[in-house]
Amino acid sequence: MIDRILSMFTTVGHEPHGSILVILFIGFVFGFILQYTRVAEFDKIAGFAMMKDTIVPKMLFFAIGLTSIGLYFMVKMGYAEYHIKPILLGGLVIGGIIFGIGMAIFGKCPGTGPVSIADGRMDVLVGAIGGVLGGLIFTVYYDKFKLIMGKSLGKDSLTTIFTGHESLAIFIFGIGLIVISIIIPLRELDEE
Amino acid sequence: MIRKMPWWLGGILMAGLLLFAFSHIGASRPIGASTYVPYFAGILFNLDPQEYPYLQEVNNAGAWEGVMLLGALFGGFITSVFITKTFKFTVMPAGWKKYKNDSVLSRLFWSFLGGFLLIVGARLAGGCTSGHFLSGMSQGAISSMIFGGVVLITVLVTGKLFYKSGAENDR
Image 1 (cartoon, rainbow over the protein chains, first blue to last red):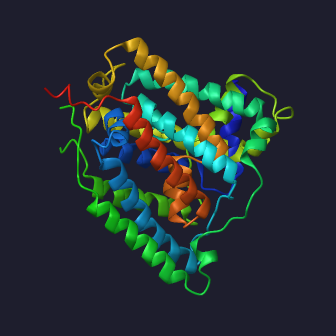
Image 2: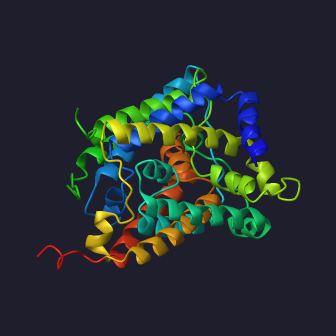
């Protein structure tokens, strides 16, 4: 097992996706933001499911709105590329439903979970064991799950659908999300 | 020091981090956070990638996310101890006690099941809140918008059905 953990670092080291230090830095800042804004807390995510806390959707939509416009310019100027995921309708819809149920009752998602464990939340550690079991079953029965996921319907995005009006489509999308994030009423389920 | 960062500042910083990760000086790839789980399961149960094609598919992305999440654990821990000062070993979230029940066993059972569903769902869809929501929708990806719409509706419906409304608790 130790050798496979070490091979994780060599795999990453050989890849062109940033040095190990840069990736650790990205993770560090990711954990810092999720912890400092408290969006990794059960009360924030399950609170959103109960519509008693709106910090998660406000921050999420605001970040997506800003990033979509920034990234569009970066791609245009050649500083980045798009990495669009394929449309696997069965996987997206059925996976989305299963994911949504899990997110509402667990009060975590795969990124906020580890941050919560680092905050001392032991119920999340138990949930992580459930998650590893889920990952194991998915890996072992991948051929069966693949049947549910279905065939790829392509990798469409706003820029491929609205060819010729890409800038306008991205601006409407990005600014729309920023406006939504601002008009969602601020509600907080505070434990303190 | 202020112990909580406002949502808009968190949104700006998260956008900056996503753009950095996408950029050539960063990692030239989106941030994702659910592929590492089957990767980690493969290590933990010593599964042979030759036998399980999925492990070959996720080998590079799983390793990348594994290293990133090590950083996230560290960043979360440092922030929890020194900035938010919230670090404490607990098993019962305040909201669960108020809107579900006060049984630790019930919380642990549902956490386990919730974690299980979360990963199966994310792997079926090919992404999670990070990969689809944050990174995917920021690229205007249709797949991520379908996932995002389904997840938003399911989260709100589940929240309505699973938890008490809280009216009787507020008295």
